[in-house]
Image (cartoon, rainbow, N blue to C red; front, side, top):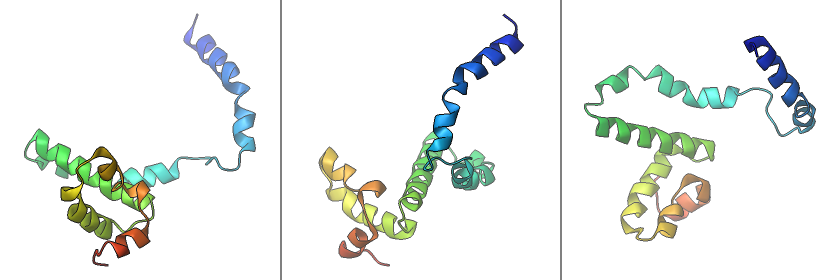
Length: 117
């Protein structure tokens, strides 16, 4: 089987699923949202060469992930990180830690928690 015939067969095989996707108005037609979220990472990738160590790079990636996830969940990153760093030391169970994840919080939760806005 040639590459062209394989590609044609693949395209024909997925053709039946395409119309269903177009009928669902919740689906984005492009991935601009995802691309815009990773733009800061792409812009700063040369800076990461100077993380100092693999552990430093891992910590940076974790922090960037928390910031972007907070943004994606409608939270102000600075307020969320203050809340997280204030409450994480007392979170002793997996459930308590999970409750601090951005998708489990609302802006009102952060205000009630005493975080500085």
